[in-house]
Image (cartoon, rainbow, N blue to C red; front, side, top):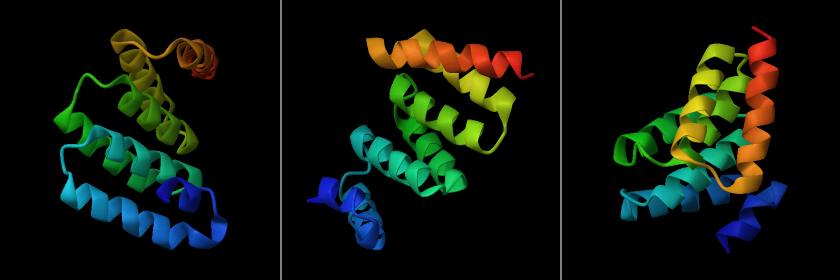
Length: 114
């Protein structure tokens, strides 16, 4: 149900509410932090995305997807150094193969823009 709401532009508020409720019920569930952070990234609310990813990192500092998500948010905020640092951390921890390839391409692009 939540997955359907996430992809329905008319249901954005409801999707956010349901994800927040899940996070209240399961405050140590990293997958919910990832879902909510990605949701905020898709909505263009990068400050909220960063806040959520940072909270997730406090719980699990070795989750590469949290660093990946925060890197995307920083990139969209034009905070290139922060995005580079987050990408490096995500790659150091280890991303899934296809995501790793994209992260390396993005890292190189951002480093060239410094």
